[in-house]
Image 1 (cartoon, rainbow, N blue to C red):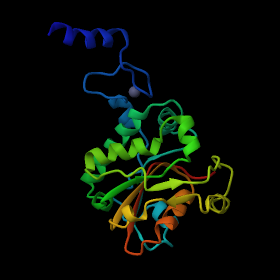
Image 2 (cartoon, helix red, strand yellow; image 1 turned 90 degrees about the vertical axis):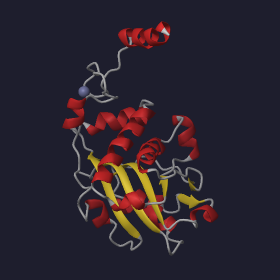
Image 3 (cartoon, protein in one colour; image 1 turned 180 degrees about the vertical axis):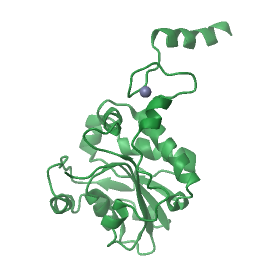
Image 4 (cartoon, rainbow, N blue to C red; image 1 turned 180 degrees about the horizontal axis):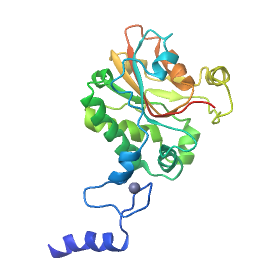
Length: 235
Ligand SMILES: [Zn+2]
């Protein structure tokens, strides 16, 4: 009995959990990001808005129910080190944590995406996923799923073209390069749903979302909601 309690305490003493952002020791009840840093994160405050910059960019697609993002992403944004932790330093739990955090706020706002029946993370190309070991959007999707109680499907939608990160390209160039990059591999599974939530880590020009929405547009009765953990804009 004693050892059970003692071991984690000793572990904490020598390897204390630190905040991902300020690297200070986390207090009891804090998880991954300290309350101070959580409070200072650049939230978009989009969840209560009927329109967002994402939904305006994608206004041409009539099957979109809602399109939103949780954090603002940019050169000096504190969201940047968080996204880097999640994407390049293997901190998958951070993705789940931020997904859960966003889900609580989406629920309190009564956001339309909460009525989705299935969550589909934007897939990585299999080669990219092998190199990284995981898909960061899948981690965010799992976090959202655990609070919203919507299942996640990671097998029915796949990426067939490996595009580089195209930060210097215009929206038109990006969308042109992405055309045909995604493929619905199990249409029989997707056909069962009327409202699907697509989840991505960072949306810049909404080109990735647009290409995904086009791939899903073969299902005429299907509505889509879109969620990006962070939203940036090209300079
Ligand atoms: Zn902190």
